[in-house]
Image (spheres, rainbow, N blue to C red):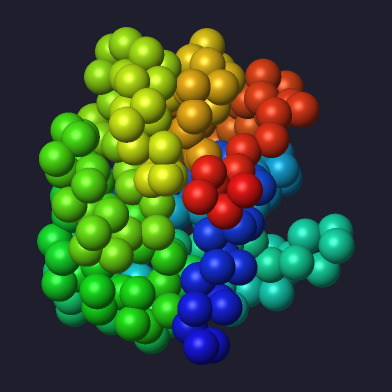
Length: 223
C-alpha cells in the first residue's frame, strides 16, 4: 500500500511538472552545476542517466542534498535514466531515487522497480511495444526515439491507446514541446537541447516554461 501511494504521488508530480530534464554527461563533475541551473530555472524533475560516470553516487548526493529544496520546502524528484537491469533499478531504489527510465522495456526490470516503489518509465515506440510495456507494469511509457512528426505520432497513438500515458523523448525543443503536450503527451523528456552548457540552462528552462504555460495534462483513465 505504501509503495502504491508513493508511486501515485511521484507520477502525479511528473504529470504536473510536465518537463523531465535528462542529464547525460561524460564528466561527473559537470553534473552538480547543471542540476543547480535546472533548479534555478524552475525544473524540479531531473533524471541522471546511468551512462554518466558515478551516476548512482550523484543521484544519492542529489537526493540527500537539502540545499536543493524548493521555495515551498519541496524536494526535487531525482531519478535514473538508461536503466537496463534489475541490479540497476534496485540500486536506484536503495539510494532514494523516485523513478527509473529506460530506452527499452524489460518486464523484469519494470516489475522490480515497481515492487521497490519506483515510478517506472520504460521505452517503447510501436503500438505493440507500448501496450507490452504498459502490460508489464509501466506507470508512464517513454515513446523513444520520437519520430520526426512527433505530435502527429503521439496524436495517432492516443486514439486507440487513450488510457496509456505517454512521455516522448528525443529531439524535443521549444518548437515542438507544446504541440506534443496538446497532442496528448503527459510529460516530456528533454535532454540535449536543455543542457548543452550550464550557463545557458536557466534561460532555456524559462523558455520551455513560457511555451507550455497554461497547459494542464491529465492521465485519461483517472479523469
